[in-house]
Image (cartoon, rainbow, N blue to C red; front, top):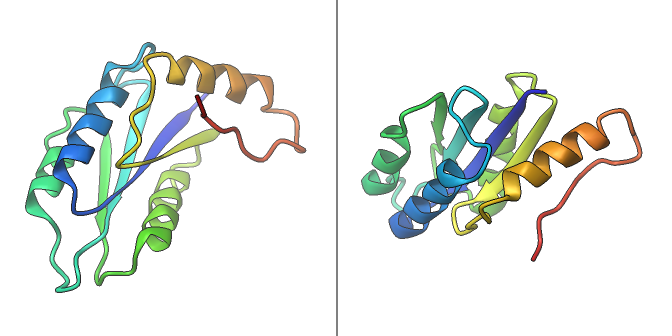
Length: 130
């Protein structure tokens, strides 16, 4: 099963650093198993936060990194991250915003849910909540 991870990020390097570290440190994660797709929104001046960009650009695995041409906000960023993650034709996409710190076993749950519901068209989304 092919599972991609979509991340929407903004002007918050500490959030991005912690969120990416939680993903990479989660049980079951490996760069061979999960591709990361990230969309970074820009500020009001049209500038991307370079520190945020560098955090994702320095990730040592498969990564597609997109940047917004103008500030379009959270909804655009989530949609842009999802669009680039689905372009690779995965079976499943996990959407994470930059301020989300997944638990150490979140990817194991996602793998279970993706397999359990892969043939059930009535299931359109699976959530993570503590």
